[in-house]
Length: 237
Ligand SMILES: [Zn+2]
Image 1: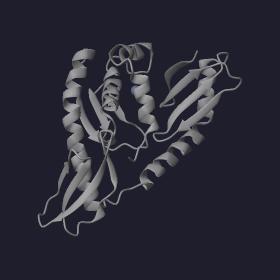
Image 2 (image 1 turned 135 degrees about the horizontal axis):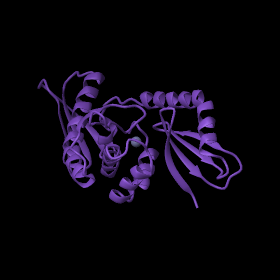
Image 3 (image 1 turned 30 degrees about the horizontal axis):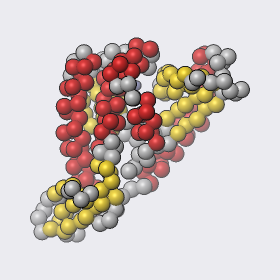
Image 4 (image 1 turned 60 degrees about the horizontal axis):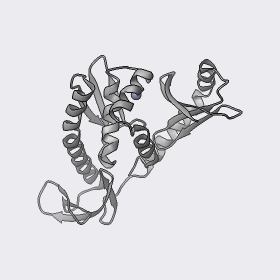
């Protein structure tokens, strides 16, 4: 039987898995640089902490590598490119127009039409696309944050959207603030619910302790699978 818990070590959120193995193993996984430690039951939590702290330099280096990989796979915004919208792959169709602004419209046939002024640069197209993604995410997240705050019995937080390279969400319980990663607009909607519930559960407990896990288990029983699926998806798609 495997037993997974989330623990904080030196500011890192670490997944600790207890299983009958000989040696402790530390892994850092793409795309977000998630840290997972597999340890035999005989090794104490303190010894696990020491082992992680000793390899902190290596862990940070791996996380920086994944950040770099995520940055490399940048888009050109040409027709035919695949862009994901809430987990659905859409084929980009660029339509040059004489207008000055940009209109982005998904359709039922899995196409994402982008009407842009002729001669727009890749940077301009990237900017319009990211503005559009931000609006999509805001529209989907707004009712969810209200719904989950009622279910969890915590106040509706102030929240914002920003691009984060190694985290799907973050929060500051003292300030009642939640941040969502802009790239959640590309991921299936259960991932958005998971990240919202995770961050808002920190208003119940700031740490990844039993109380925190019980809030997740009670309100979103499938959260472990959703998180595994989310972390298996490439960050850049
Ligand atoms: Zn957390």
